[in-house]
Amino acid sequence: MSIEIKRLFDFPYYQLEKYNLKNALNTKHNGKWVSTSTEEYISKANTVSRALLRLGVQPNDKIAVISTNNRTEWNICDIGILQTGAQNVPIYPTISKEDYEYILNHSEATYCFASNKDIVAKLNQIKGNTKLKEVFTFDDIEGEKNWSEILELGKDESNKQEVIDRKSVITTNDLATLIYTSGTTGKPKGVMLSHENLVSNVLSSEKRVPLDYGNSRGLSFLPICHVFERMILYLYQYCGVSIYFAESIEKLTENAQEIKPQVMTAVPRLYEKIYDKIYAKGIELSGIKKNLFFWALDLGLKYKPNGANGWWYETKLKFARKLIFSKWQAALGGELKLMVSGSAALQPRLTRVFAAAGMPVMEGYGLTETSPVISVNDSRNDGFKVGTVGKIIEGVEIKISDNDEILVKGPNVMLGYFKNPEKTSEAIKDGYFYTGDKGEVIDGFLKITGRIKEMFKTSGGKYVVPNLLEDNLKQSRFIEQIMVVGEGEKMPTAFIQPNFSFVKEWAKRHNLRFNSLEELTSNPKVKERIQEEVDACNTSFGKWERIKRFELTPEEWSIDNGHLTPTMKMKRKIIKEIYKDLYEKMYDRA
Picture 1: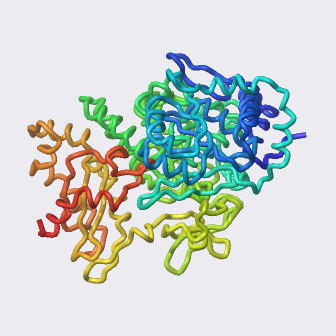
Picture 2: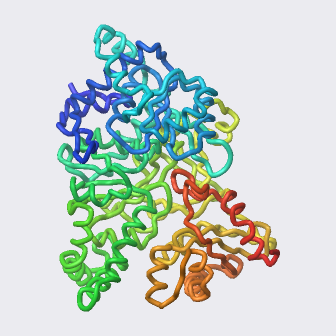
């Protein structure tokens, strides 16, 4: 009798029964991939559960997990925690120690698993201000308790029945995890997701997965504390996909060439970086090789799904794939069948060119509060439309409000915000979650058209939707980040962070001298060239929406410097404050 999946910890047991993988979870240690079988995965998770019971962990206790990299230990601890009826509270490793302290106190976490010395150093500064009883580390760190002590404590199976009893009373509607949204303003909110929220999302999303179940490899590198990657890992387990955890973003290509994945997930920024590297290599070519490269690239930028461009285009594409795009594939292992994108808007040109290259990026849409998937493209059955986030997944219902806001109802909608009934009642009304995103449905495909809260009005009373301008301009190779501003002002303006790697290369080709990013961004010829990009974008918008002025920022926007959230979203208020002088300059108030 097949296992019915109702709770998150049912996934590995289902995998054991259906696929029993030898290499279910794979992490690199000392230069070698170390594999954990499905059987060992479950065994160690049960060991963790027994140990936690011996430590006195009770149902509904909160246990934090903080890891710099995705790794096998995270998944083992996740299942081990959930089987006790406690909740896993994943925390972004890159946030400040003050945010660590806030989340640990707000969740009332009693234990914490931490990956390495950098995280432990931050924890040790604030641990005394929290309810943490112990911190266990995945790496061996002198003077710190290691998670191997948990495995040792749980070796004795005499309380095995107690774990079984705990599991038996956990229902699909019970709280499984608290995920603190990184938030672009204010303190993070603890999103309460039940077992049903995530399980239903996995089972509905599975219908959009064109993989060879039981025989595929997935490369995981998006932070597992993000609900998108976490749901994907449960999905991989359900589909019998062997999961390989990349060592780092920097080693992504190297790891991909080693394991030859069939599937991976990423945020748009990573696909942009992959594309930029490929483009840079094309620029370095010469003669016929360079001509062929750009012929294939131009062909890719005209791609339409389902053979819509006709037989002659498809014939040329076949040659382009053989001559050029096969090399793109080889850089990522040569066997990629599917890439998934979420968290932010994907540039349509990237969607087209990667699909043309035989590595289709299926863009989806969702939020932490919706576990997360609401819609996703599918390369099969006419389910793929460039510029959209796909069709709504099974079991989920959406409606578009009078002000174009996307409202969502379904088993994936969160239980609410932890300890915050007021915010919960604001977000969920009559069973519908108010996403804050504007959208429309075209031929069954959902298209995101903006963000309610980010729309602003100029002093002339005209509305501007900054996302539309930003998404358009981010298609330029010269622009990495852009933030349109102008609320209450006479006109929209923008802060632009150039794509420094591309602009540096462009500047050298045009014999421009610079010794620093400040010199590069203040060079009139650089600004003139980016003005061309802005002018081209402006032609697609009404006069009141057009960007009249912009300033280039002389540093890269990053999480560490406070510009971006851990999910790479812009912190608009903070960016505006950081570049306050540039803002005043654009409005002639400097």
